[in-house]
Length: 83
Length: 83
DNA sequence: AACTATACCGGTATTAGTATCCGGGTATAG
DNA sequence: CTATACCCGGATACTAATACCGGTATAGTT
Image 1 (cartoon, each protein chain N blue to C red):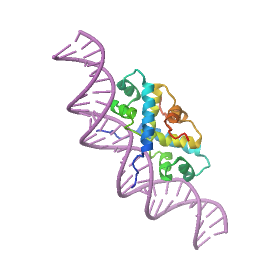
Image 2: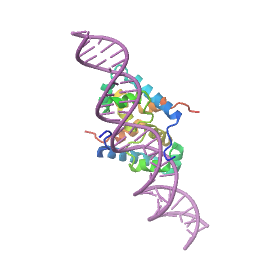
Image 3: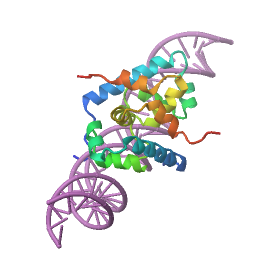
Image 4: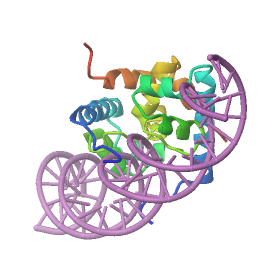
């Protein structure tokens, strides 16, 4: 194994992240937010549903900027099991 | 083209990010910080040198946690186009 | 000189992120 | 009934992220 597959914990973490992002989107449509963040609507949907479990840093940074939320806040909210 | 290659701007952004991370690492060794962040030393080195231009969000989050820096700070510092 | 620790680089292997295309479902307006 | 606008999911294509390996270089120690 050179690059190990994503663990169930990592997938859970991705779902948490997506859930928080969807909540932050609120009333706005996926297409609008995706366009504002410079990404395709399909990609944003996959991130929100957790099907993209480990998205790129700058992708999340652009989303956080559009949604007006903090990256640190996002990271904390996505950390599942501290101990 | 399904997934377009990284643009020169994206590569520059990655170099900025890596430079900031390296500066934050200070005296500590790559292997130590990489181990603390739960990643391989090779990956951390590539991130710091900019050869990994768009690292995963949680990878950077773990690094920022170990280094004691803010993700928002990192994102701002890596945004090149001020105008 | 030999050893150790650190960092850089190139290659290889595997999985994952991202984009485009396709069809389906629901709801609302006309 | 049609048209529009969302959201959802799968399939495909291509590139990138990550890990492991071996080689190289430099500096410090004994």
